[in-house]
Image 1: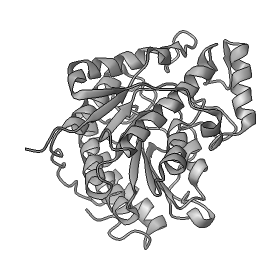
Image 2: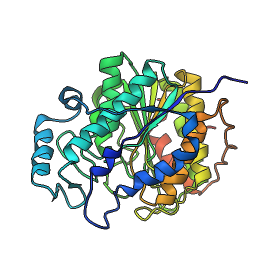
Image 3: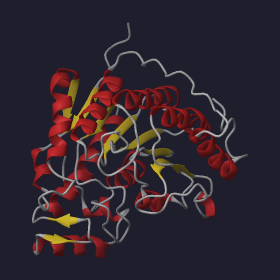
Image 4: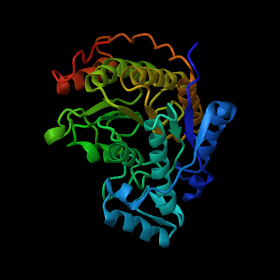
Amino acid sequence: MAAPRITAVVEDSRYRDHRGPAGHPERPDRLTAVADAIAPRRDLLTAIAPRVASREEILRIHSADHLEHVAAACRQAPAHLDPDTYVAAASYDVGRLAAGGSIELVHEIAAGRVHAGIASVRPPGHHAEADRAMGFCLFNNVAIAARALQAQEGVDRILILDWDVHHGNGTQHSFEDDPSVLYVSTHQYPYYPGTGSAAEAGRGRGVGATVNIPMPAGCGDAEYIGAFQRILVPVTRAFRPDFILVSCGFDAHREDPLAAMQVSGAGFAALAAIVRRLADEICAGRLAFILEGGYALVGVREGTEAVLDTLCAADAPALPPVVALESGSNLAHVVGCVVAVHAGRFPDLGAA
């Protein structure tokens, strides 16, 4: 039997100090759901303490004006940066702590002290642009962590897989001209924030290093698993990343109030199994999940359980059966859209 894997988790009670208006879906209780999933598995996990990200680390992604705008809003809190995105007095510090916690997780993985892990952080980050907070997001945690890996750990090629139900516009725009960071996103489309068509494939030297997988409302386990098998797997094998980061939203869950997808807890387990197999095969298992959205507490708990069980397993979990590509199906439509844009760039694209 293989030796136990060392799986890490980043948690901190200060992440709950980012508090918004009553009834706002991005609320501290989301972390309670994560903690409920962690509790019975805590003996299997290694705790990593977060820290506040430095200005230098954040400025690799965001402008100085953006940092000052968020800080100034927090000095006048409670306030809104847009109709959806709020700040409390503590939000500037909590946002920097979320970015720093993400950096610490990837640092420990890159150093080989842990194999993989999950950062239970908030506020989320993947909508945050270089100079704009939006979509509940202040600073782009996964993008900041990716640049830290390159600048501080010497990691060259990074895959960012974004399985949040909303397209990560901020992450895409951070790397769309950079061939060293491959951004792959599954998301409900058309939907907020309006970006993420299959035709958005990068620009300049980065053309082909953005792979959007736009999915119609109502997709569930079969469509997501099939898209991973037929798009993510061949793309990842062709790119051969040195590290995989997952923008880990659980809002594609069938109970989520802010979307219309039908993924189950078992579905998230299957997706996590595919990603772990790829990490084990290509980049020595270096894999970090960074929490994004997810607004049904049952979905956050079930999704976190699925990810943790997959990461902690000594042996890689069994892969799900190949999903058939039936003519006229949602899966066939999705795969066809991606193949039409990226045909010729990735061997075996569309095959399973």
